[in-house]
Length: 97
Image (cartoon, rainbow, N blue to C red; front, side, top):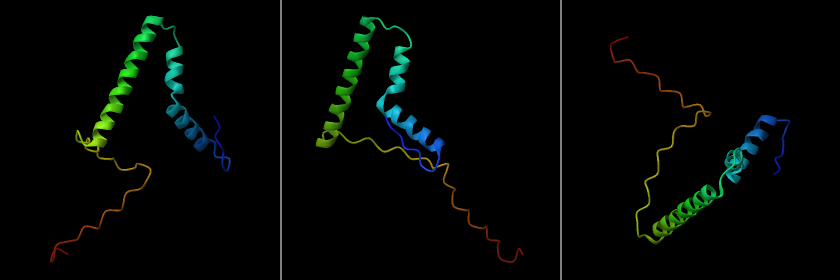
């Protein structure tokens, strides 16, 4: 895995690396390998993961073919890094000045 560091910005490169590792499932694998897993438990986990993947694939196919309705999109929160637009100045009622 390779991450480029631009303008000596190590913090941004570290963030990109963590995101790549998360997508690849490296953190999950490290957590699993922390302790011994019995073969029977491993088989059960892998089977459950396979069932989950198959159900997800079937659900996506059914949505694509129009057999079931697509889930409603979740409302996206405002980006905390992006400053919100300044609120409009409150107008004073006529004659209150």
